Length: 252
Image (cartoon, rainbow, N blue to C red; front, side):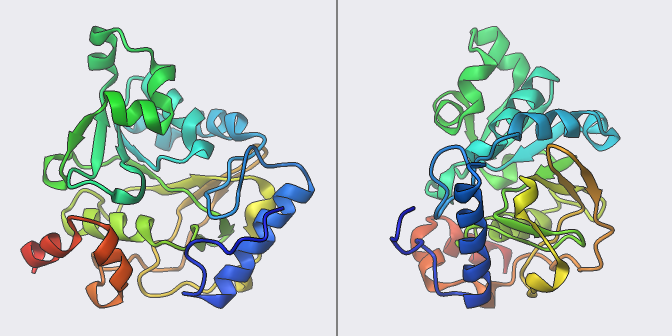
């Protein structure tokens, strides 16, 4: 186990402690795949969770899907392409002025690019078409990476705030609508009692949680934020995400 401090530690001590617990439990029970600290953890059973999700009506109905770029959701991204869904994936850490890539399975087939090659984030960035937020289609399903979740839809990522920023922008632009399902795939060790995770005003809740063994429809009581809460964006986020300040100005 690494003793190095997680990259984004310090914004919420309670969430920091919960993340450390998740990462430690996954390591201790050998349920992780690869390093977990400062990451959305990849986990044993990620493929089974993706298969379980693929049997749900919310998946069958979706033509346009957004997924986080983390390894835990790589099987899900592969399944989306195999099922003919157009897939949007953010550039890791939103580090470019064109922050998303579009993976269109029909286009990939024409170019002779195997879906397996673009299911990982490196192949997706290499072969996908980079797009701005205003070039994106409305989303039918949103998959976000999580470190810890609760059965009522509470969630936290690795502490950087990228997912909440993405969702806030897409909500403000109408890409994520009130009825758009938001979900994640996680290991059972990442699911906690509700009182362990306090949701804040900028936190976007989950509608569905999929594990290798279970489908949880959260019926979440937590409201979705009204767009992006600019007064809660951190100075380092403005510094590290190139387009964020100009987007704030354009959105008013």
